[in-house]
Length: 368
Image (cartoon, rainbow, N blue to C red; front, side):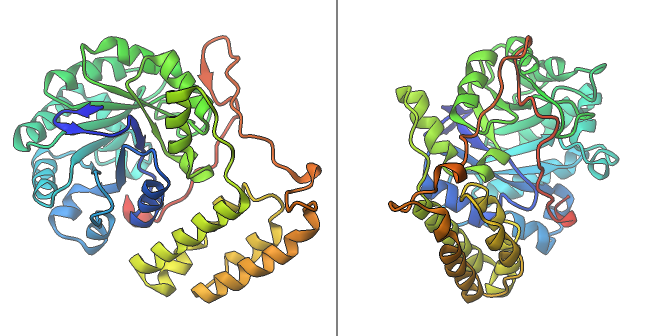
């Protein structure tokens, strides 16, 4: 797949997730496989220009973290342009503009979802960036501000006219936040509205089946996955395999999940130091534990770790505690086995995720 001049090995993308899509997590996903393009956490354009240490930390990368896009937010064309130029000089592969963040603090300054309410102003900002850099400029949007203001098709046409390289569309409105149903029909209308710019569908893709339905129902050119990658870091590889072969790969074994979890911690320590890395990992480890079977003992203890050795002690204690839940082959007894993650697609209007709400990781306020 191509985004402008950027050639990608896959049409699967990592969505920004504040506080989580940092360098260690991106490296884990790349090592597992299947990921085409990863995007950083949301970065304030002005903070980046001013070389704020927190902003610089958000765009930290390494040779293994390629290709990489940085997502910017801001409402001033000159600031967004200068930030894009700075990122291009640093070797970033692509710049994404956040037009979908529903958080009030972002919208109040004209960024995020607020950009969907002023199409002319937003198109001017994007043109300013596109004209200034050679790397692809993309945009991440929602369907609109609320159900009475579905502006995504019109905005998509306006952005295509000023040279945007791709459009990422989350199938909810700003008013929905991360609750309610993803409207695949809304993404499809954006696909139908543009002449040829790639549209990437996003929202509640947690399984290969969900990705297939997203592709087939919307006609999108790619799929972007956020929270689904925390439920299952193997999702990109599994989706890629399922789309290519029609086959479903088996769930990772307990040993594989533990191996990747330990690798994730080691990368956190490498990036942030042992103390901070372990504290940050407290909110990551429980996501891995969701698919380990009974894990109450692990979850209670892992949120207190301060060192890598404390994590290893916690893990070894958990493995011993878990033995009564296993059969003679070391597999979970039937009554403790987890059901496969499933999504309900049987709605009259194709909509993903019938549940009323989905857990949303709460990243540090500073990243906004």
